[in-house]
Structure formats: C-alpha cells, structure tokens
Amino acid sequence: MGAGHAAAQTASGFPYRQIRAVYDDATIRVYQAFNDQIADAALAAGRFVAPFSRSRMTWIKPSFRWMIYRAGWGHKDDNQRRILAIDLRREGFEWALANSCPSHPDPAMTPQQWQQHRDATPVRIQWDPERDLHFHPLDHRSIQIGLGRPAVLRYVEEWIQRIEDITPLAHRMHALVQADRLEEAAALLPPERPYLPLTEV
Image (cartoon, rainbow, N blue to C red; front, side, top):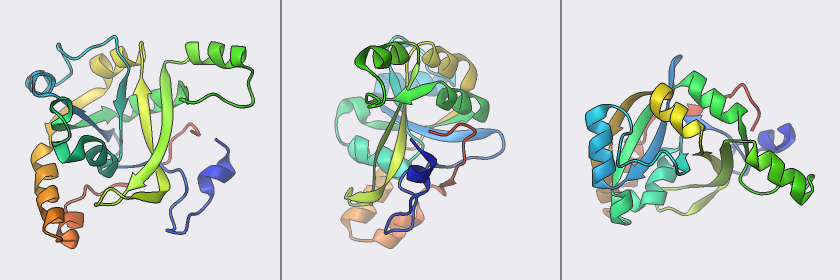
C-alpha cells in the first residue's frame, strides 16, 4: 500500500486505511472470538493453550467494532461466542507487521513471484470496511492480521501479556443498540486511537 493511499482522507475524515487501537508504551490490544473451550483454557492459563491450534492461521483485530461485527456481538455461532481482548507486546505486533504481506496477490508481481513471496511471509494483512453500531460498512478500513507459523508460536509464547473476556461488554452494548440507545452504546466503546506503526502496511 502506498503512503498516498494510506493518507487519503475519506468523507468521514478518517484515512482510508488506518490502524486504530487501544495501546500504551508497552502493549497494544487486539481481539479474537472463540468457543467456550478455547476461551476458558486461555483465560485460565493466561495464554493460548490446547484446544487452541498452533498449526492454523489465527486472525487478530485491533478494532473492537470490527470484532463485534464479525462475531455478531458474540451471538453469531458457538465458535465465536466468547470475545477476548488480548494485550500484546508492541514489539510483537510490530514484528507481525514487518513480516507481513497482503492477503491478496500483488498485481505488480507475476503469479510465481507472488507465490514465492507469500510462502516466505508468515503474516497476512487484510483491510476491511469499518462498521458502525448497526454493522453498516463505513467509508474507511480496519486492519485484520493473520498469523501463520512461525508467527502463531511467537504470539502464544512471547507476545501475549494479558487476556480478558469482554463478552459481557459486547452483550451490554448489543442490548443498548437494540433499544436504540446508541449514544450509551457508543460511550462503552474502547478508547481506540490512531496507531502509527514502524512498518508501512
């Protein structure tokens, strides 16, 4: 992605592509949704353990709104009923970005070049439309980061500092949205702010 594309302002005033997250000097927060078994084991251990799979790509999302959209407020299906907030070491998050490639082919590469590049890169980047509280797509994008091996091993063994179950927050916000109390629901959103990574993505 070129810098001009990243900086282009949308009608809403947001850059078209921008990482927005809860973070401090040491950690950055991402979200994932799982079934009860994976969530309970992770919360008990403070990191992801079996039945979490280390061999499959796992997708982390800094945008809470995109996470609740993807998980349907934790009501979409049993495999996404528990929404977890995971605080990562910022060094790990930066490593993921520095060792990433887009999830879709680069038109500047031949199919063979793209295959070689993808096979050598353990992390995938995908930009999807951000969502409002009714899950309507907005005019700017949020990042999803897919961790394959060896990134998953680093994620599980080195990066995770804290895991919190925030499913009750998602359910509370959902009830407020259903009651058309949007201002109250919006007030519960995590205080995400623009995050400027060391690596352009």
